[in-house]
Image 1 (cartoon, rainbow, N blue to C red):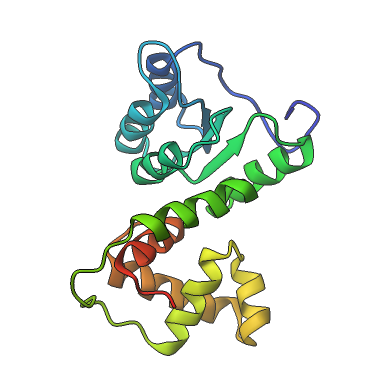
Image 2 (cartoon, rainbow, N blue to C red):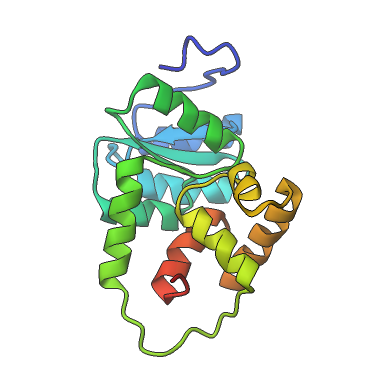
Length: 193
């Protein structure tokens, strides 16, 4: 699907998870596209290893598994994208571009399933200790809706730079490494209204 995109360069192709890890270590690509189910080493284990040996390489999962449990595990492993194989070419290319920019992409139907799963499994035994400002809560709410920094800025009438600062504060306060993990953690902690 990416061959016709002039600004993408395919630098390697693996037949199993271990080969993918080895190629990422040798080639240090900007993005690795993996399946959840691969021989020798599954996509989640491969993702964890790639994040260690090639920390600047982003990983996206391309899979047929429309399962929110897989999605949660993939996010915990550190992926920046979760794209279904039956996605349109346009969606697939957009997902890759978003991942290359460091933004997380999750197929729309999977986002809804993820939020439903987290909402039904959330059990709050005590109030969260994490305190977000009103603006950080607004930004976080829009992150969970899949909005980009530019869209958040437009909706809240603030600059993209200000949005980025709020996102950095949210990520630091929640103790996570990216905006998708921040959304998952916020839902787990019951921080969103």
